[in-house]
Each structure stands twice: as structure tokens, then as C-alpha cells.
Image 1 (cartoon, helix red, strand yellow):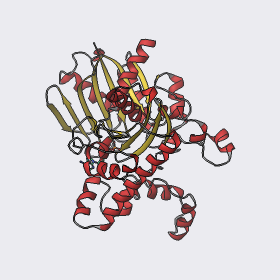
Image 2 (cartoon, protein in one colour):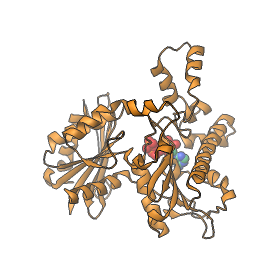
Image 3 (spheres, protein in one colour):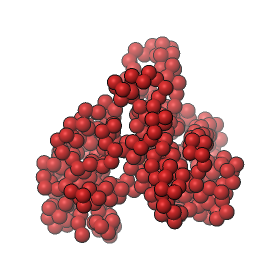
Image 4 (cartoon, helix red, strand yellow):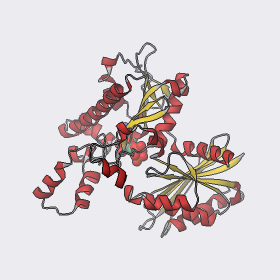
Length: 398
Ligand code: ADP
């Protein structure tokens, strides 16, 4: 039995889960929020429903890690810090360097830093987390897991853009995708639930949250994914535009008198998608409610979201030459019964039928009917557990 800590650090937050392995038991999870911003907060859930919450000044990631490790001991979650034998870090962009999770060394740190341009908000924050834990738990095994790594198996025909080939050769311009840890986790779990080896299946995993991506998982490997060079593209998202015609940028810069590309990208990243279309909210729950009250633009935003997911599912069925199972996961995918329903209703041409009693909030598993031509699954994703499993694997190999 050993304790592993999994860290997901963002620019102003640090989320964590503590696992006991190999039992895969989650013993604590929590969040340090608003790091470096007024009103920083620490929240920890542990034991059998115990909670710790405090507002205090946390000026940077190092202080956050310091407080977190202090509290793990102080709250009795661990007796000694050296019980934590490994720390796993979720890193957003791994470029072409990382095809799977790796043990962190100086070279790994250098590469994560080098490709920070591909995830300017995330990679530097991920690195801060890695370095802070190296200071405080120097003896713990340190692992980096990348959101892009799972997609490194995509064939060139799917990862290249039809732009000059030199852009790829000289500047690494290609589709990297994201949410890879989640797509990998749910595709493996789906295979388990279907009682078949993942290597024998064609799956389409729909990670639908604030950020959304759809992935074609062919024989256990990522074959294509809707996110691109960055997580801006693909389906309509909470505040991100998803796919747009690149020529629109120059046209709108002219119309809006904007001369900075950063400002344009800010609009596409933060003021588009569900919020941009509806003008109501970026949250699917609010939109469903507004639509129910007759708000047409809220309804349009939901319809566009549904259409985009249906479009990518269709595209990936065509690319893979069929599909055995479709998986719904993440905030919207797991929790929104009506959105799942609307997507599945559009797929009845596949001979897909679902069980209304299983298309519920908490049912974990197959929600299609036994005679459905395509299986549909609702699965809770667990990126942290996937990272914890990767740590165990790397520890064994070390
Ligand atoms: P993130 O990409 O930040 O990890 P999540 O996967 O947690 O996002 O998804 C968050 C989103 O899930 C919310 O913005 C909201 O739109 C949606 N969501 C959560 N619960 C529900 C629900 N019951 N019905 C519809 N949408 C929901």
C-alpha cells in the first residue's frame, strides 16, 4: 500500500487528489483557488465526509504546495509526508516530445518549458507545480502526464493541416488534441463495461464539459480528435468558438478596428461558443432553463452544440468505417440527460436505441438498449486515477 498525490495546477489554482494504491482508493481531494489573487481559498475533503475550508493569503504556487502539504499532515490525512511516495502532474501540452507519461527529470522540465507557446496559460503553471513539489517532497517519484500524449498515435493523415508542409517540419504545426487522459480512461473503461478488449473496438468518446472534444479511438488508440493545435477548435464550447474559417480573423479585425491578434484570440477563446451565441450564459444548465422559458438564442446555442457533436461523431464513423460504442463523459456528458438525449435522437439512423431509465444522472455504464446497433455509455471520467495508474506503471519499470 502506498499513497500517491495527483496534481492539476492551473494559472491560479491547484487541484489535487490523494490515492491509496494499488487499491485505487481516493482518500482526499481538494483545491487551492485564487492563487496570487485576493480571496485565496483552500478546500479539502477527506476521510468519511470531513471537510476543511479556509480563506487565507496564498501568494504563489510554492506557498500553495507548502500549505497543502502542511494541511495533509495537520489534518491527519497522512502521518508523515514521506508516506507520499509519488506525485503525478497533469500537463496540458506535451508537443511531439511526449507520447506517454514520463518520470520528471531536467530534460523533461526543459521540454515542457520549450513548448509553453502551445499552452501559454497552462504549461508554465504546470511547471510551477512540478518545481514546488520537487522542493518540498524531494524524495517522491515525480511523474508528468500529458493531455496531448494519447493523441500521439494519430496517423499523419489525421494530424496534419492542409497548410504548407514546412509549417509542420519547421514549426511543429499540427493537430495535438487535448483531454487525452480522459479519452484514454473512458475508452478503457468502456471496453471493460462492454466485456471486449479495447484493441477490438471502434469507439467515439465525447468529453463534453466547459471545454469539449470528441475523439475517435480505434483499437485502443487515438485515431482522430476534434481539438487542434490548441484547444480552441472542434465543437462549440462554453466560451470557445470551436471551428471557424481563419479568414474571418482579418475580416473582423478590420470591422472592429482591432489590431492585435491576442485580442481576437481572446474573443474566440472567451466570448464565443455557448455564451457568444446565446448572450445568456456559458453554462449548459442555464441555457436549458432559458430555452425552457422561451429564449430562442439559448435554444440555438444548444442546437449548435448538439449539431457539432453529431457532426464529429458522423465524421469519425466515416473515418473508422463504423463504430461499436459512443461514450459520454465530463460535466455535460455525464450530467445532462436532455443533451445526451438530443444527441442520441439525432443518431437513430445508426439503429441506435437507448434505455430511458438508464439515461439518468448517476447510471454508470451502458445506456443503450440490448438490441441497439451501437452501444452508448455514460461514464464518469477520472483523469487523476488514470495518472495514478500511470505512476504505478512507471514505478514498476523504474
Ligand atoms: P471543465 O472543462 O472545466 O473540466 P466540466 O467537465 O466540469 O468542465 O464541465 C463543466 C460544465 O458542465 C458546466 O459549465 C456546465 O455547463 C456543465 N454541467 C454540469 N452539470 C450539468 C447538468 N446537470 N446539466 C447540464 N450541464 C451541466
